[in-house]
Amino acid sequence: MSQLFMKGNEAIAESAVRAGCEFFAGYPITPQNEIPEYLSWRLDEVGGVFVQGESEVAAVNMIYGASCAGKRVMTSTSGPGLSLKAEGISYLAASRLPAVIVDVARTGAGLGQIKPGQNDYWFVKSPGHGGFKTIVLAPHTVQEAVDLTYMAFDLADRDLAPVIVLADGVIGAMMEAVTLPPFKDTYPDKTSWILNGAENRESRIISSVTNDLNKLESFHVYQKELYESWGRKDVMVESFMASDAEYIIAAYGTSARIAKTAIRILREKGIKIGLIRPITIVPFPYEAFEDLPYNNVKGILVTELCIPSQMIDDIQLGVLKRIPVHTFGRGGGFIFSPEDIIDELNKVFSLED
Amino acid sequence: MENSLLIAGFGGQGIMTLGQIIGYAATKSHLKATYYPSYGAEQRGGTANCAVVIADQEIGSPVRNKLNHIIAMNEPSFKRFEYNLIDQGSFFINSSLIKITVKKEKANVYNIAASELAMDIANIHSANFVMLGAYIAATKILDKNIVAETIDDYFTHKKEIAKISLIAFDEGFRQISKLGGKGCHDTTFK
Image: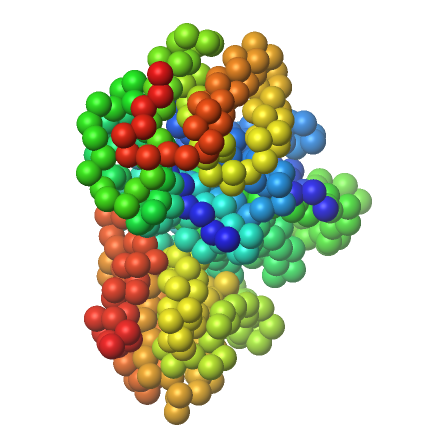
């Protein structure tokens, strides 16, 4: 397979096309602009439809509509835009509609800044009102961004639910070699539920409002069972040099790849350190932390491109205070270096003494 | 092997183009590569820089503090990154625009009058390719012919720019070859 040197955002867009995405609606926001830019011409080439909505609210409701019609749909945005799309994502979840939402995260609440950040971790686990969850896939390379975007469409169709791809400004803006997946040619049959005209069949309603309260509660029970099933079958996690590690870095996305460089440097000095990297944020790989060899592991450092740490909540649920868990991050759109991580490890664990 | 390079200069000097071409050429050479542009609410005429890592194994961080090589196209970027160079690392300095001397010790310094050379032989806008030629000649990090092919491919719809860029690239290469590939603190070309 030939390798292409591609920008993260464009690779995500091309992967969506190959996964059979036929409809994209979005609204510009840095650092994800290359996704709609690319799809504006690319979807036209493959017979799909691209719409730049008049706002994020319009765009998310457009994908709601196209998903009702049975199309594979996607929108992409960054933090402030995701806030605006939250209502629509909640409606997608309540109406049981598949959709892929890409969040190329940036730094800060409010408008924050356009620089990269991992500030949307808390938000994407339940990106809207009403108590629903989304599967969240968090790539740490451009290749993984391609693979997870491709997979997201299948997960969305399997569960009839929105799925989030959580990248960040570094993954979106950087270029790296990728092998693109083949064009999908078979898709799940959606004829039993889509709105395609009620000729010769009973009419259907797709709606997020349920007046029958018993039916509504059954749906809530169904949601619970669905989320529990994710925990049993959809967890993805990478363990990097962690099998004999005395110190563990916990990180996802860009901060995990920076940590890998720090770990390689420390391993050369004989320090037993490794990485546990959640690939799925939801469902979170709690077991990877529950099952650590606690007689051997002395401590954990959670590294994230945000302050305060957000992932520490999930790490603590796995670790349950059996060993010290420290956090290290940069806010303000700054990116820490491998050396910054090493300095922090030395500070909290006196590693190189 | 893992090599970190930072290319820095003014917006408009072809900094990003250079970084991308090195990334494309590395991929063509079956090496791993990452390219990360600094982006932000940048001002026109402000600084532009990009980080390129080339390796023969999985690349972790695409952004580094400790740099093996720096290509500096103007003074502000040189001042900003001078002390990020590792000992025995190499500076490629556009001496047409950078008139200050390197204070960092234990550094290989290649002073290339890239802007002037580019003006003489091709076009001022191809100064970046003079630097690329010098960089490839001195570091041998990529095969010259593969880089030349990549430049040609990159400007596949702009044949005139491809031609000028390749002339500039060859000139940069020649500047280093003249010295037998060696650089030193007080070496200036031209």
